[in-house]
Image 1 (cartoon, rainbow, N blue to C red):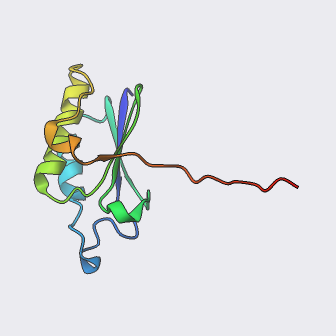
Image 2 (cartoon, rainbow, N blue to C red):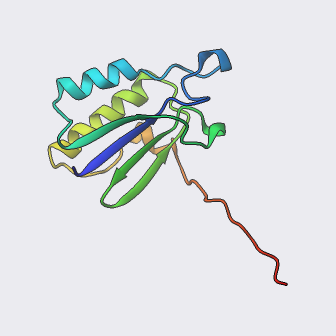
Length: 117
């Protein structure tokens, strides 16, 4: 498995009652089946990935590292995820489609500072 797409469907992501766009889970699963992506790019629908302020978050994992995407609000964003996965499966590289470039963010880890005694 060379890559993984983790799509949040947790406490905020996809919750229309909270004012966020629906996450098209069934359409993503169907696309993975249609394009036979399961052996090259794993699709995971997860609980809360955080950070909730970025709502509709996805995480792309490759051998090059992690790419966080947030505020995926249009079907075009999810179509671009599918396109990206197809490119990975066909060995065309890991470059993000342009429409997803503006959705990238850096997730900072919590920093714990201890007082010295």
